[in-house]
Length: 314
Image (cartoon, rainbow, N blue to C red):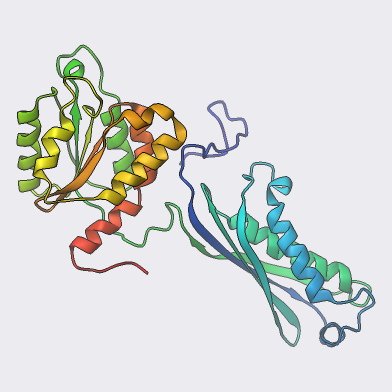
């Protein structure tokens, strides 16, 4: 198991999420503060010396969520879309539930947990003059939605990688982008069929794609041959094979690439369906395919559930 907050020599390091696209994320955390029933009565009737406890605790928790990066050293600073805290007043305790939302490159678990913690501490501070027995506990993450850890489709397609490069095919260069794709999809749980290197030859591209589609390869990803050179023929080879195109996939890849490097506008991407296989062609650079993995995984896997008639995820 790798420790994501340690660098190569074992020193603490912030995780670099600059290569990850922003996606919708939610985290829900909960906890409670136990106190004497008499304290609960005073709190409920706003009879405590420091004033309205629940309103103050709610504001403190929301403020804490927005400032989590200033409290937790390696936590990323996020632009929160929404944060809220609700309380469940019981006989001898008050339950606390915090919900936090964002459209960012990393999750908001720490923000939700911090909101619960600070809301509980605020209640402790406001009630400690009348209750010395209070106890804070059971702070836990209840739900996390978004990112790679939230993948509702457990199915992983059989995947093969096709590398298009004259120089790699002749041994003058070493394949890097194909290996990045192989490792990326394998780490996501996809069974890898074949990683094949061929020259930039339109007829051979068509032959390999048709053979793989006929053999039941469900996801075919090509890398290389998407530029403007005379030997860049991947797109020309693929387009006539598509029974339908996937413009949403193409747009997501274009938008993410152009947001990082302006020359990405010169790449020609294509995605579509050949027989029962989804085929996606990507540029030949390691940076481009690494970015594509961030965009495609795990969102692309939902397509296979749809193709199998399982409908749309909620």
